[in-house]
Each structure stands twice: as C-alpha cells, then as structure tokens.
Amino acid sequence: MTSQRMVTYVLLAAGVIVLGGEFFLVRWYPGHKQRATEAALKLLPYHNDGLGVRMKVAAALYGKVEIYPGGVRIYRPALIESGPSLTLTLEPNTGGESQFSPQTLAAWETSGASKDLSGFEFQHQTINNRDAALIWEYVAQTHAMQLTARIIAPDRILKAVCETGSSNRNLYMRACDETVQTINLTGAPSTLTSPKQISIHSVH
Image 1 (tube, helix red, strand yellow):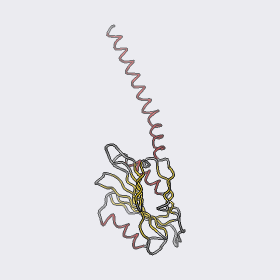
Image 2: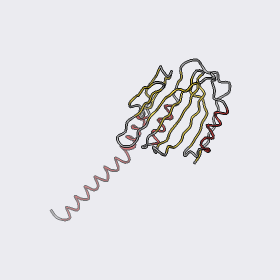
Image 3: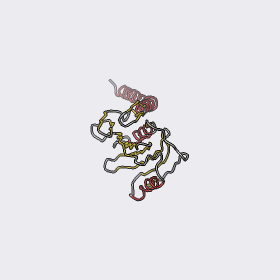
Image 4: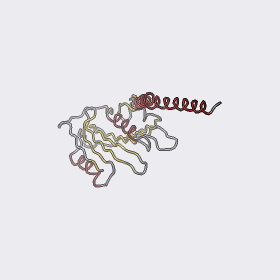
C-alpha cells in the first residue's frame, strides 16, 4: 500500500469520525438530553393518608419510600454522591389558623440575612388554596440545594424538605419545585382572608 493511499484512507476515516461526532452533538444528543429531562420531571401520583397528603412526585426524586411515625422520606439512592430526596413531616397548628402570621413570615424572610445563608430565597404564596412559605438555600455540608416548604391547614402544618443531592442540582431543583407545587392537604378548607402574597429576598 502506497503512502498516498494510506493518507487517503486516514483522511476518509477522519471524515467519518468528524461527521459521526457532528451528528451526535448536533442531532442526537440534544434530543436525548431533552427526552431525559422530560422523563426526570414526569410527575407521578403519591398519597399518604396518615399525613393527609395527595401530590405528584417528579420521577427524578421517586425511588424508595420510607414511612415512619409522623413522616415519610422519598429518595433516589446514588452510588457515589448524595442523591435527591423529599421528606414530609407534620407540625402542630395549635391555633387553628389558616394563614401564617406576619411575624412568622417576617422571621423566615429575614433568616437568610441573619444566618448568612448562601443561595437564600424566600417566597410566600398559596399552594392548592393553602397558605405556604418556601425557602431555598445552599447546604454546604452536602453540596446541595434545599427547598423547605411549609403549608398550613387549620389542623396541621406540613413541612416538606426537598434536597437536590450533590449532582445535577439544576435538574433536581426543578424536580423539587414542580413537586412541591402539587402538594394538596386534605381536610377542612382554609379561610384565606387576604390575597396571595409574594415576597422574595435573596442573599448572594
């Protein structure tokens, strides 16, 4: 085989590799990534009569379920890094209120600055006709983002803590956000005397 023919074969092989790589990067990979994201964010039904909760959990979080007195933990195990998880627990609502007090909301809203929390964000809103307070923050110990939501009903307060784990935090935070927004507390309806309020405070 002449050296000229060898060079030709090498160039042809290189051209095939380049074209294959271009197809992978331009055509196949973006579509695959989109399909994987959609699958991870697919909402699956979940209910727990003990907590009085009906909701939908993103598939990215839905792995194993551990039920214990007063709570449940839904998580997806990871081999090396910490995986995402969602923990639901009940807190007492001794006063029977349907809304969080302005003092309580103010304390939560300013906790980011007072505790010097990284990535802190606070939001006050309604979720399925229940008053709710949401806090996002970065957890240095686990290298994860964490969303803590409290949703109040006249007979109880549900606390939902959703953690992304240390890998792919953006995807898992979307899964946490979309999951929390589906939480529906069963029982007596809330009497909301003021319209939905939203206030945000961030610490960078």
